[in-house]
Length: 524
Image (cartoon, rainbow, N blue to C red; front, top):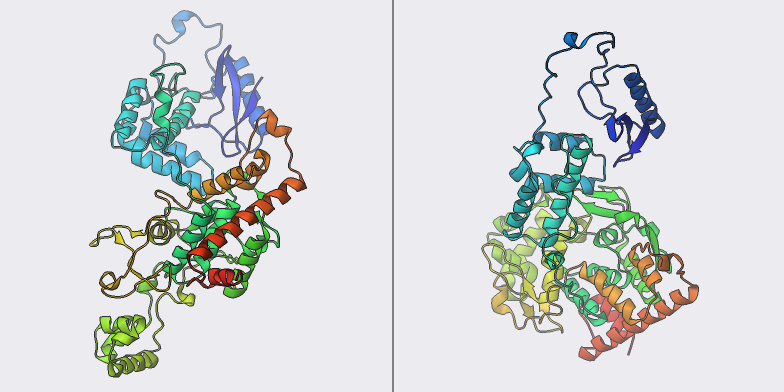
């Protein structure tokens, strides 16, 4: 009896018995598996194929076979030749086109296939790919060197493709399958990644302050603290819509996932981890003040109102029409460096020159890049991490040709130092920042959040709920979260925050960051 088998993407394929132990798939005239919308349709098609078999009709060609009364002499002397099997490259192109998954997953599959699988296996027929070939490829990838976790992910994609080819009878066994109990006993240690760097509550506060000093606004401070005390993922923070911020909680319903094309795809959170995260009172107040101060408007790309906006000019802003710095310099009869000094260090320019430049600015209606109206709609992962978060954590700007990596140049006052801007900033620097947590990334704040909850003796069930993790164990099924647990966690997070503020105030009672300065002054 035939049946419908569910596939990735939500569709079904019909499966029927050709002989004991041998299953066939309902295919079209081109030999491709037919994708059915419902299980019932797939089962009906499979039953029809079995009925054709019982009537001695060849399912591949859909024409009658020789009747039983013919003698053996009348049968063909040789079986028809088997159709040529496709190469890995030919098969994987059709395989990828048949997938119907989230854009982020499709993007990752495409990257794995084009960058790592096709160069090695693209021209090979399936029967030419052996287990030894797969192992040799994995060793070569690790020797590049790529991280062991990355090679494991690419091998998982290869295993998935070859498993589908095995189901379609293109190969008899999957050469990428791992056999348990084989190889070196310490083999699993090769897949280990370095321990994730974390910080503490004071580190979260200091990193947020530095990031805001680098950007020249409060958004990065508020965003860093929000991420550190809620444990939301990066995409969930960027995609946090105003309507989902509640007086005492935040509802995680969507994320903005950045694709390779630069487009930000609004999609459900990872693994459908919809959840409500309780907020301590200090965080609700901080974010509410931020919303009132920034008055966010719907973005042009999604038409929705997001709490946090991007830093820097939007993509393509440099190519847009409008008055540029060079136009002001040309009208004033000075260099662009002089105009830059007037904007950044007016005291370093002669008054006569400064007045001339200011008159040119007023006449042309020049608007300085990086103003509020010129900010990108959303944070970009690479831009935020490279030019704001990492310099805040390490105190160093990354390498960017023609400049090598160098410390963030600071003017010593006010404490903790304000980044020097404009020409010869390094020569005018009076101080630099010391590192806070070597190797820390924005995702490391999520690990930091769990570490803080561990220190507060938070029950595992509540930690998993806040982070969007799923524990399928029996112990977790019988574990439940009570209002008292939530209250204790909120009180604990508030105590941790108060201690961090007090430690920061002991360093200096004021801050150049407006939002933090208000908090410090309020404790006097």
